[in-house]
Length: 342
Image (tube, rainbow, N blue to C red; front, side, top):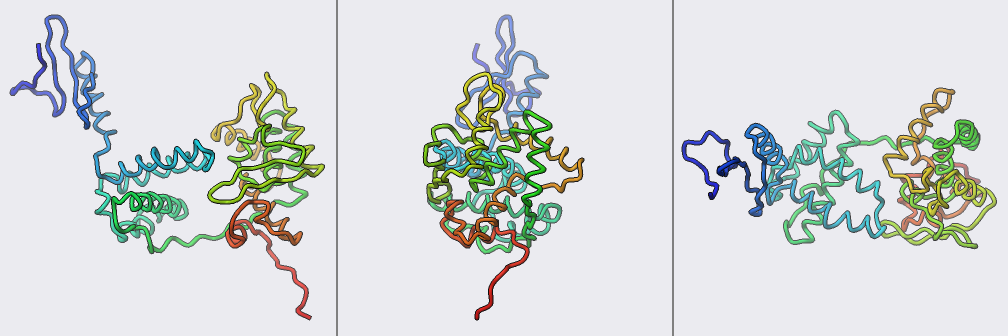
């Protein structure tokens, strides 16, 4: 018997029924002419239908555009090693709030005024920095759409962002020594997390690159890091401290010979979320013993600041194309020291 909608049926829209000799089945049709079975229980079928409709992204909307960007642009870049997995994770999280605000709008209907209100009246009022990051992501999505010929103008361009106070936390050498000592006393994940921080500091690299650092990148000359975000490939040559830290991390207990420098007990690399939990647990112990909180990202700021104070070009270590980019974000010197002109 062919299922069809009864005129007098009390079924909700888009819920269809097929009545056989022994069983009754419910189903629906999603965009793209996709038929989806909803089971044989009416109440359960209604619930499934509502969940499906809630998650359906209408064509031509901002929500669809964001999903397409993540799928067709960002995920391939992550797979190629050109973007960090952490970047993808952050963008997926940011997409939730952007979809809540703009998701149902047509991509052509979003105006600079909508973006300004998001930044300064709604999302930005409670979380101004997060609002800035989210709109920066939306701007990238619209730039991609413009390149695809879907739109002519980017509504995020030229909209004033919320003011941000630059982060100025600089981890001292004494703090780093005490932090590593505490981690070794605590053992296992704390030690692994602290060693990862020290490697990030010594090499000037971000968390994503350190968590994916493998034996294949290690040679007699040093550690080679692939270029990221249009930067340059970097070979960080050996120092006694870097060599010792790498060896200690590789020697951490593992069921198998680990391929990754920072690894779990099973020998596999840490996921971003898994490492974050271990890092936060160690940081709580550090603060409980009187230490001042800092982030993993502060390792790069310490590396950059130390290199600048040594009179070296910071971009040679970080791989950035522009010195100004590194200085703006990572230079944490509180006082500039200079000899007189004469």
